[in-house]
Length: 290
Length: 339
Image 1 (cartoon, each protein chain N blue to C red):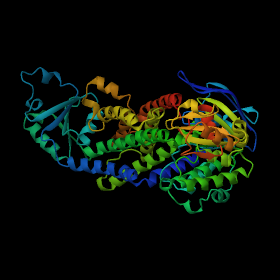
Image 2 (tube, chains in turn brown, green):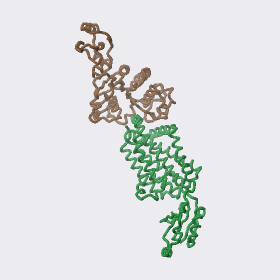
Image 3 (tube, each protein chain N blue to C red):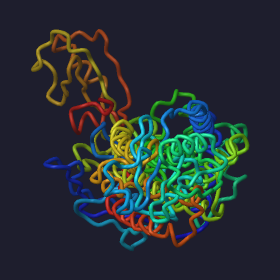
């Protein structure tokens, strides 16, 4: 559906995006993950045609990306202001008029749960309502490709989960979605495929489970506070982070015995299944949310 | 250019304007305040001194005499000389001067409807003015407010066009409305056209309402064609909006935009001839004032309203504004950016 090759964006001497290659097949939901400043937004804004790349090519359905492709793309930006003093319904109709093809208004309202909000002024929407409305704007032209840039940032957990169920409905329609987020649960819940970005490059790319399997096999992570234990007392596979240590293992019993025999206290020990946050830590040494 | 895009944007912008009660209210009320305020302030007969105009040179018999006639140098009278006889007569007819001495006919011209004219005539005759023949003219006075009303409309047009377009687009750019629209198939020409047309409609309607509303009470002098007045107004608004687009094209901050717009607004307020006539300012100032769109608007509207000028007489002003519009639009389109 969309493919980028050698995509770069340089601001002055800083490469915000550095030779990124991503191909997204039709019907796939790709999650673009990474901490703030990793280059996610710049990357998708180039794919949206909003920002000119310094270098590289972008192909939409095999053709170089051009202005006319905007008719087939739906976009939800991280922050969007809307014209003031107009209602949700008027805003949706305004945007509908800007595209050559439209999804039926009633269908859109149902899909995004906007029935109650149609007469409300844009300024009077709550965070979750606003995101649903912006999603409706992204879908107004019945797009083949949808970009969602951190759509749930700033929402409370309830609103976030509601929003996920909306996105699942859209996914069920076999549309191609590119989503950026720094919530791991979100990527795990929604994405078929994940690209992790750090400092302008893609450092890992696969389906969420495959990605975890690659790095953690079928194991779990044993986490222990470091306290005063010297670093060299931990087994060699242990990864040291400020204040705690993570030990990936496929045999918890053996690992625990090893720790005890080394005279390390097990106070505060926890065991969890590795998630994308652990993967990110593993890959970059910093937490995704930092 | 797709008409559907433009009309959708115009509709949205109009609703935004009309529902923003605060802005709407001040856009409508402010010019009324100004007009009635000035009408009240200048309602009395301010000038105590009589003004006598002269046209042509006195005959040799007068200049060669030992003493010039007393009526050419009377205390308490200010004299003004004219090069254009028809214009000078018009000044008498509209009560701008109290009496005209026309040496080419060796006559004096007095307006029979003017009390000050009758007074000036008495003073003249008692100072040897009997040597001149008497000629009469009649005509209603131009009040200051008749002269000033195009200025008020002009001020309102200027603020509404510069800030209404400049400011709004800068705000859209700053808060991301522009970026969101850019992600749609709407192109910049369509977007800008919609903003222009929407503002043109709003400012034109506001101007008509202000003029017509104040006219009910003050009954402005109108010697020319209302249709021509409307044409001048529309052309001027387009010019001012285009000027506003130059400011709107790049700035990201409303503070910077409003600062720069003010830099453009104040010279126009001071030197376009809104409050006082440019006839008495130094020539250099008069030349500079030609670059302001408002100068042309005011000249043309006053010519139509106060002198009954036709299309030909004001075509120079219209052409100047058309050229300015083209230049402003070109510059704006060259420097426009979405973000």
